[in-house]
Image: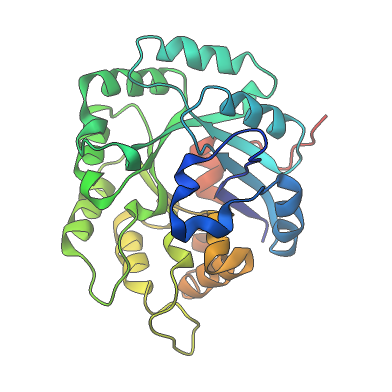
Length: 290
């Protein structure tokens, strides 16, 4: 089965700093990770298309990502960044569309994780920007901490014309006991028809429990809550490479995803590993770069 990796990054520290990497535990990521690094690993796992996702809130990053995608047979879509609180968000999106690779812009993301205001996503100015994202025919990726998920629910309810994609299942803290506050908010988010979620991020959590089906017993409860809420047609696989190299590596997150989904039908697996991402991001798969 050809796979779409719906969530990965690249960065070149000689071109742009990545301030979020200043945390001590992220020291192994303080080097360049390029598309040429990913390509052989993707091929080995049967990945034929990917979605490249922003990392910093700088206007120059997204044009560079679009240009990279334009010259790549692998990248089928880009989730970039614009300032959603600025009055000119619609114009900024339009300008990105006019750039080389602009036709590959599939979504917008803002790292809500760094916002001290847990209600940032439901601010009136942000909601106006989200409406601009919807009007442009794009989707919005939510990367947030569990304490910020209630605002994501409010924003998705207030902007029903926009598809919200929840990255990393909302970043729950994986432990022996599932946080019921996170679980309840995730269910509320999943109950909205304009929401989708990524099986990403948590796939690389170090194993607490192992069993015969692989080192996924510790994350299976989180997967099952997401599967019950969204169903396969609203779930998509993402590697979160290269962040996943901290623990599981590229092949490891694929192995975890295969282990978790082993009991699904072929059609359900096809949705999670390909169809949901293709439909949500409106990807043209198997395209040839010029």
